[in-house]
Amino acid sequence: MAASISSLPSMTDGPFLTDGGLETTLVFHDGIDLPCFAAFPLLRDEKGRGRIERYYEPYIRMALARRIGFLLDTPTWRANRDWGARLGYSPEDLEVVNREVVRWARSMSELYATPDTPIVVNGVIGPRGDGYRPGSLMSPDQAQDYHAAQVSAFRDAGADMASAMTINYAEEAIGIVRAAGSAGLPIAVSFTVETDGSLATGDSLADAIRRVDDATHGGPAYYMINCAHPDHFEDALGTDGSWIRRVGGIRANASTKSHAELDESLELDIGDPADLGRRYRALRDRMGHLRVLGGCCGTDHRHIAAICEACLP
Image 1: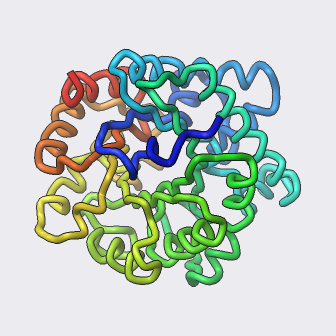
Image 2 (image 1 turned 90 degrees about the vertical axis):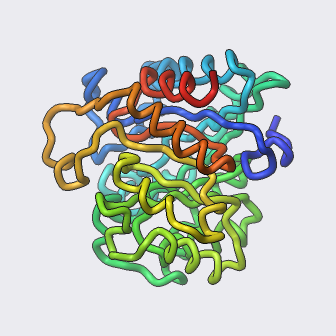
């Protein structure tokens, strides 16, 4: 059963919890090889599916203990055409995969959801290129055409919403939002920033959000920031502007290292979970509209527990 519209993060003032860094947990803690950093192939067999389910369970139980909503992200960050091709998946294969993953997430939702803890099935869309480097840039029309297949698969399989994660330039975000609008699927956009709080293109977070909102008539349900440490974007969120109220969630990295440094790291930097929790609390005290709280690279259940203790005691 799909979550009701009134249960989506964009339609409620209550907090929503989500998970930490799925891929970094699998690679560095579990020793699982993830070619192209893609987790979705694990769901194709029973053993891999069991590992993914065990990964999500502690996060879901934290939400259940606090009687708050949970945003269940599908592990489909790499399940688009270019990355799929590198992994040996055809466009037709990927359509099947994206539908199957949403149905799996729906089964998890039905298993754990309660009246106090709605579990929203969130189809995750990753960037066409590298999340840290823009590479070859698309126009909004090209991005819409490129991402439409994954968006449609999510809709057809019954996802409650979708989120574009680790997006590093506005044109790709505009195209994804337009694809979601055409499909009638609620969409959130999560930008990643460099250590100076700006996108890799040099655009400020404020400018990127304004550009997407202007081009899509305020299409995203909300915006997020992911795959950067709060130390990198706290100052950017301390400025004035109505755009700040459009930022509805944070999924920060554990490490204060730059993207370039993380790319070269052979060991996982888990940072300081307690400090990360305090930084989330400071952001939430300043931005009471922050609803979605989770983690990204390097974070695990310890970091999310610290965030809960700091923000949702």
